[in-house]
Image 1 (tube, rainbow, N blue to C red):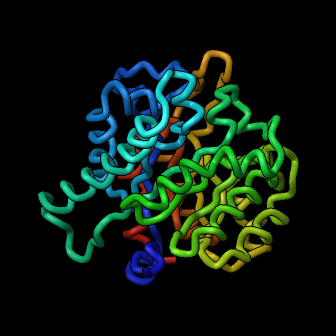
Image 2 (image 1 turned 120 degrees about the vertical axis):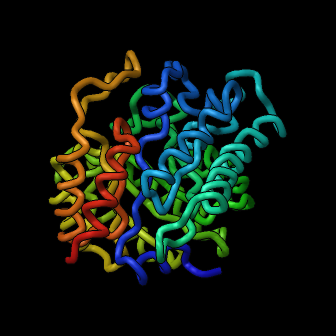
Length: 315
């Protein structure tokens, strides 16, 4: 199977990602103050997830990310959902995205030259299951083997799905990156990107040096891009330089809006500006990023602006 991002890079030079899924669902009035976060709606209102995927595609996303970030066997087990029922919900996250992509592609009047969008299956960190904000600290109670065991069931389900690649995202620690890398090595037919949550211009959330972790991960052939997500935009330029010092693979950046997250109340605070975010994305591409989008508290308006900036500019 061909590297799924290659046609976009060859034809347009960049891949436009979507924006925040859960926070966009919240903006539409859905209460996600729950340990399952966006995965709660896989149980209650799956059509709402599908609609947000469509909104991002209409805004110009080349790639949409599934609602499996906080969907895990152990997470559903806490809700009393076990075995095949839990696995079916993880499969549903991919099916909703694939259905949205196919509907969009089949019904819209396509812009000349636009490529068929792709689906990335989200592999959220162990911290997402803990639901205590530790995806921004890397303060875990599991070692490497424990993290491999935690991720394995969902990983296999997503590898067997119709997703085009896996999105290993918001990874806060070198140990978790190594655990996910071990699973990718066991899956020779899978492609994945790795993106990290960072606490400053040089370090992952757990204090590990980003460049050192990137250097390890890019040795895996199936890694198609590596970079940063759900990190404050003010750090992104320096982090792009840090990533590029360790690899020559495409760099991915999809930071949050720059607002602050309150883990206790599961709320974001601050303001967001789609115009400034789009201008920043142009700078990031100029600095070497090739996959660009948004994470928490960015929405379709951000993605629309990003596409307008990036695909009318030359670098």
